[in-house]
Amino acid sequence: MIQKIISITILLVIGLLTYNYFFGTAQEREQAQDIFGKGAEVVGASADLLKAEYQKFNDGKYDEALNNINGLLSKLKEKGGEIDDWKKRKEDWDQKKNDLEKLMDSGSGFVDEEVKNPLKI
Image (cartoon, rainbow, N blue to C red; front, side, top):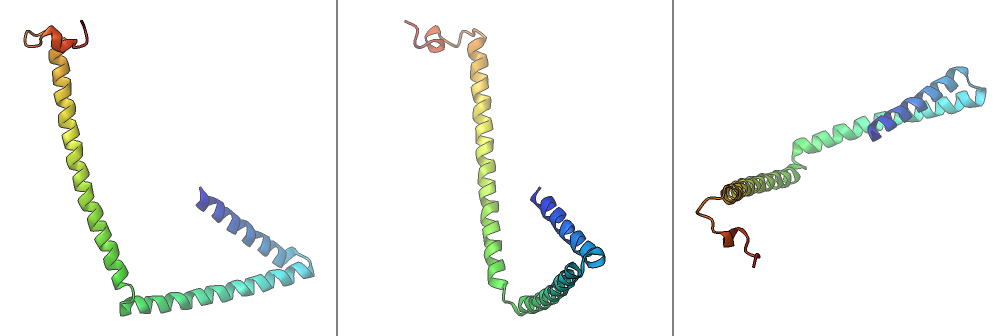
């Protein structure tokens, strides 16, 4: 949702700047040219930044951070296994509960009236 709003906003700004660049007044054309020039500078600076960070990545700057993330993911995976064990136990308890309820409802001779209704006097 937010991504769509940002995309639409960017498209509207670019559309407005393009309109002003071709069809605007002299002041609007100058402003659009100035903004487009700054945009080109930003793109160039961003490309230089990405190149520098890629070189730092190759040199091992982010190895420790990646190892920490790997450790965190391993711990989460272990916890996920524990959750699966608890889910299995819960399913077993639910099945035993259902079996006992069926046994009590069946009127079987194994279940005493006092066990069925312990609060009944």
